[in-house]
Length: 73
Image (cartoon, rainbow, N blue to C red; front, side, top):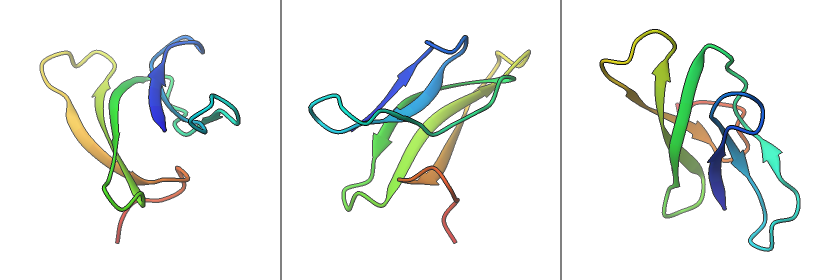
């Protein structure tokens, strides 16, 4: 299960088990807002919305592996 939270001062992406255990922060960007995460049907990727600080005109869709470590090849 993936979700966005601003518990650390700005919106970041987190992963957790369905029962709420093992919450892990996946993004670490103090200068950007990240939200609206969605997992891929096969569970390998997370797509999310990112808006850089100071640029409120548009956001981008980013993609990362489910562990938060890498971008797709």
